[in-house]
Image (tube, rainbow, N blue to C red):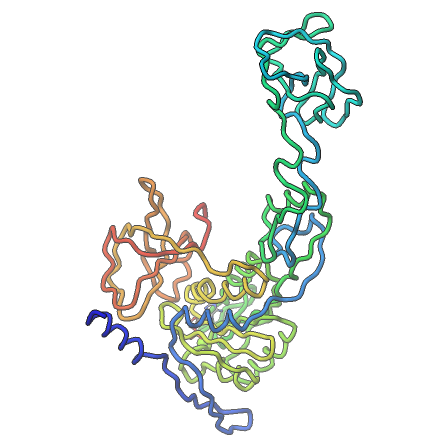
Length: 439
Ligand code: AMP
Ligand code: MG
């Protein structure tokens, strides 16, 4: 072991997560001691949540309702596809022999448009006119393109004879009966649904849509449509997150703004009892009016952790009560979105039954530098620019956790490791998508 490896190992051993005893008051004002992990790495936080959260129950839906749902069963094909040998083109089907080379003159004995059958054998010296998708008639062993033939009265001259087997799509060429087509946990995309239709599947077992309770806390918040008195601001998080949840295929149970009071927060938590997961923004930090974590504890949650070692969105926590999971996110509008992407989205995928929960990560080249990266890991929101066959990341000019506007036109989250120092233009960093690059 080299000295460097030895030191690295020592560091790992001597730097476990911090475990602190939180002082929390219960409803009667008694102090409750609760031990909870504080300031943990994103990967550990995801692991904690993803290992505990279980997929929702299942239901059966018809194919026309299946788009975007998650399969709750493996699907094997009940039939072969194509179900019969067929022609891939318009031409003549006949019985070729191995060494046909000179033009042949064949009697035309029938016509086979797609969707019909020729119920007679083709023997040597005969041909049937055949169209794309029509079944190869019995006795025929090839199809020649119409372009390579010439009609001569009631006969056809095959100008360029083909060998046996030419231009025939065999029965089951694409799918054999019993083939495993799609696995449980697969997200039903358009081709997946099309494939199920192609083999005659009528209904599929899918996971039901996750139900997500959503509310914003903050005494300063007012909903749109209401007058904005001094000191108040409009609630944007509920709208941002509702959209993200809908995109993620969830059913949203949104409730009105909750003031920064424990009792009001407890009432709100009661109101989303039907939800599988609850997301609340605001009141997540250390201020006197940041009551979310205390409310969750009093509500009976086991707190899995508080604070993520990253920016933006450090003051996030997750609690569990029975099968319900509670995500408390920073109220800062950009931070709430970023922590949704990094932490909540993978958890929702697990809940939704998906087998792939992690976001793909890849290298991007920095189009601009960023000077302010400090001790803490930071996720920069950035526009993706395609240049010279590479993805360049153009960081939003303002990376403040409250700057919602910086999320518009940002497609990427670029992962700047802790203690990285300033980010230089041209540098390669890991990133993941947060939005379609066309937006
Ligand atoms: P908090 O997480 O409660 O400390 O809030 C951090 C910042 O985000 C404060 O400036 C809040 O006013 C603002 N904020 C909190 N919730 C929302 C919301 N739902 N919509 C817009 N801004 C919010
Ligand atoms: Mg607040």
